[in-house]
Length: 201
Image (cartoon, rainbow, N blue to C red; front, side, top):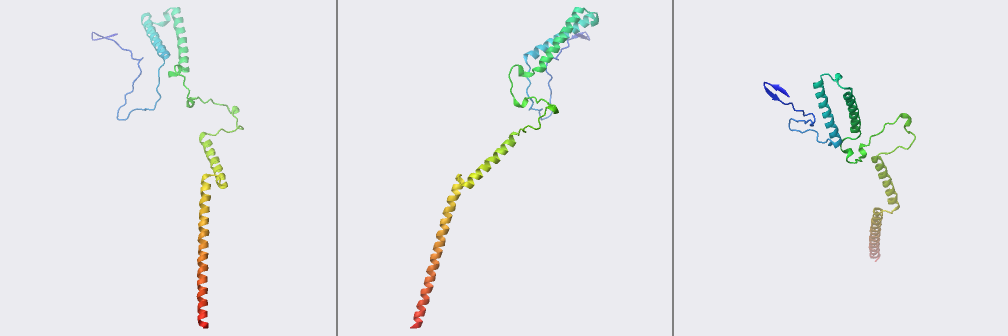
């Protein structure tokens, strides 16, 4: 509390509230960010840290210098610092809702780095999903072509039936053409005979 021209002003501490960002302009901020949830343990730890800071500030204001205080109080503050470190470690281990919900996302698996001596270069290389799918497509295409050439697929059977029909049509057309040619030859021969007979008379 401070006095300003005879009026007491209370300073408000808003450090425990989240900082809000204000964006100017038409376009908003990044909407694709992951939501971050605060677990109850984190909130409790923050409140305890704020209370401790407030108590330490009060002690410093009352006692002046912190070195002239009780050794018991100093020991207590050291113990509280250690507990804060433990709380920080706990918070680093479990952030957000990880403590509340079991999250199993294969994309979030942390890849462990391996040393060069640990790498297995001789072992079989694992293919990516796209590479595996591409190989499977090629094998399926090869199988289909083998069956197609053997005449076992539906399309091959339809093609063979169509070819048989076309072959029959061509054979019939050739036979008709041959018959027409023979008929024409017979007609010309009979015409020549008639002429030769008429000339002989």
